[in-house]
Image (cartoon, rainbow, N blue to C red; front, side, top):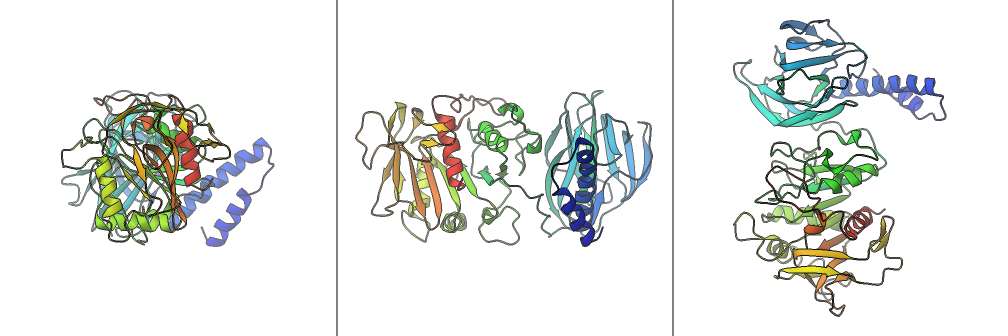
Amino acid sequence: MTNKTILFVLGILMFTGCRKQEQELFSEIENDAFKGIEKTLNPFFEDMELGVKTAYTTGNITLSTGSWTFNNALIGTSTSDKKNGTQSARITSTGKLTLLTDKANGAGTVTVKHAAYGTDASSTWQLWYSTNTGASYTQVGGTITSVSGNLATATFTVNVAGNIRFEVRKITGTSTRINIDDISISDYGTTPPPPPPTTGKKFLFDAKHGQTFGNADWVIDQDNSSISQYPTPAQSNVTSTTTESFWTGGISAWGIALAKQGHTVESLSSSASLTYGSTTNSQDLSLYDVFIVDEPNTLFSASEKTAMLQFVQNGGGLFIVGNHNGSDRNSDGYDAPAIWNNFFTSNGIVSNPFGFSFALVNLSGTTSNLATASNNPILAGSQGAVTTIQYNNGTSMTMTPTANPTVTGLIWRSGVTRNNSNVYCLTSTYGTGKVVALGDSSPTDDGTGAPGDVLYNGWSAYSHTRLLMNASLWLADL
């Protein structure tokens, strides 16, 4: 597909006011257009459109990318097969799709479209790779769950040089079936193409700094203790009725709420890098509108502190969530208040950049001691009015307007005078960016997460949802 053809097709897609039949035609054109774009951008793209295999018995099949072994798998063409085009692979039992030839130039990022076949129950699968012509394989990323509905996209960061081949393994050994389509692999050392444009904002949730240590679960999604950049199932499947349990994380409700409004949410995993201004990091902070850091449990490095300060200074939004004194979940000598205070005082650039610090206390209680809410975008924003919040073992903050005169208290501890101490929630600006700080992770907790974690539903209690969503949208300049 030429660039001129791509532009022509995308121009067609902008036409509005179509009848249903015309819309269905345009949907097919849209699929073909984006598939053509992806084929142009990535050297390896298998769309399953060539080849015939009608039985599950093990056999080899020639596809556009070479020879594959289909074990307990076939090429599906029925109306129940989820596919982008006319065909997709269908796997049953503990079947596999194995590429029999090596791809040169290694692999950077792999994306795979997937869904449960027809109305089958959900199934799980994994991606494995080999660098020794199939003699042994290594799993990459976590276990993916395919559910009924439209095709979702799973993204894997491989970053392996040299010759490489891949294998898709269905691991739910039942009669349930899954569809696999559009396997795209970028070369090692290249930046993957950006996703289709969205009118929403981009929110990055930090999962790199011990957010799952101990009984914590401050992530939007994890699968078998593995945290990927994109939550699974894909957020493109999120609708107005999707529940927070669609993803597995103690703050999945936060991510789902943002996705329902058309925003993009991602996680910064432990293997990712926290940078600002890097041209080689596909998750560089410059690519996001808001960075949310819920109760970190490991110190930020010097370069990470610089990156966050530059991000805010240049217009980014930073959501800071702390916790009570003594909340050191990994016994490294630092809890969330100490980690944040270390960032404020030992960043090598400016002392107390946002004009506040965390107190080393442990507080619980309910409060309605709020600043005047009239026209305040956080206390009286688009998501509703904030009236009451509850702390369950959190900490307060102390404001220092002499360090940053923009620091502004929003919520104080119950029964105290609204001054520079005993602040529960505040805002600040730095450069052209914004900061919101909350002294307790309990309001963000949606009560569900990884098996074994003891969590409590604070998200839907009192005014917590309205506070967190109003603050998130304010940070994103909405």
